[in-house]
Length: 145
Image 1 (cartoon, rainbow, N blue to C red):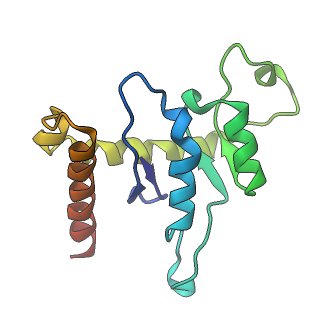
Image 2: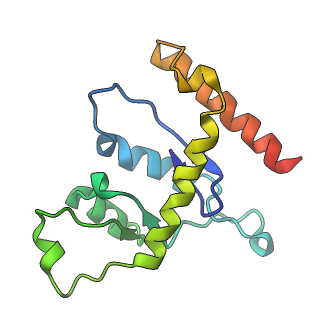
């Protein structure tokens, strides 16, 4: 799931249990960039891509970092302990921007109030994805009204 800085869900993708999330990261982030991400009131209707994208260590893959840099998005992803870049003094990690990642985790927290999603009542991925989309629509209505 990709959220904006305020915790509003933008896109999501459902994968099989054994598939790592980083395999579909480009598709999900690309869909979020194509949506109205970071739209400010004074620029209503214009689409803005994010300046930074925060993710956890699971997304610390050079392929994702290069993909983000090619789109002029600064990756705020901590390096794994076994990566060389972790010990490189040239690589600066933006701790303040990384603290904003908790917004996405809180966004996932409201999904737990939907028992059907929390218990994974729907066994087919297409049905589960539909229930997640319905939950997102309900979230949008709560934010709007």
